[in-house]
Amino acid sequence: MGNTNCTNTGTVEVGAVGEHVIARVNGLLEKGFKVGEGTDGWRRVFYGLPWKKPAGVPWSHMKAGFSQKKLLIYNARMLQDKNKHTNESKSSFFEKHGFVLCEMPTKVKDWNEDYLDADTDISNIYHKEIETLLREELFPSGTVFTHIGQDNAVLRRGPGSKNNFYGSGVHQDYALTPQEYLSAVKAYIGDNIAYENWEDGFNSHLADSDIFCVICFWRPIGMEDHTLINNPLCVLDRSSLKEED
Image 1 (cartoon, rainbow, N blue to C red):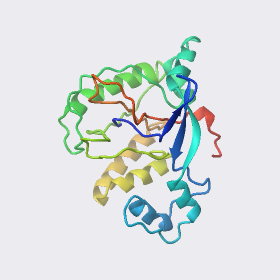
Image 2 (cartoon, helix red, strand yellow):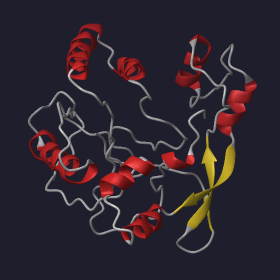
Image 3 (cartoon, helix red, strand yellow):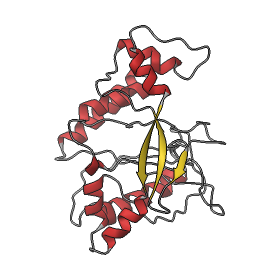
């Protein structure tokens, strides 16, 4: 579960007012790109200076990382508003498109970034707010949840946060299968014993479940008296993506 001040989609040019923008999107890698030993160094030094192309990483991949491609980015609010006229529920919209916009006021005052601190507004307030949203809006009525896991902290980006930068390239946070998810999480948990304990719990919950999914929750914070005009969040409509891609 995460929060952000926003995610950058690149420089934009206004198209039809309100309907879409033409965005220069960063980092559309080649379809055949695979992460391996040859690309591990790319992750560590890609944004550093002086920069040198890691051995074994094709220049085509480097070019994709540094270049931008113009794409039409559509207004998600308008897409969701159109579906309101058909009385489509948020849960069915979420199932079809892989995202949904929600009105979700919160009582959280302190957006904790320390994952080891378990007594904060995130664990005491936000967890309950998110669980209510999951049960009442994002999944069909009657859905049985065997386990809902949430972190004690949120991932913030931008000025004043521990991550003083934005996710300015096209990316997919986790994975498409439980096994790939395990590999992704392992990359972030440096302590082997801590990871093994987490993995044991994960596998136990997975054994009791028919469906597994990871849902990210993003929202602007600390902007109660302001309008977001820069670095808007951009998401992929899964109904627009072919499975083979």
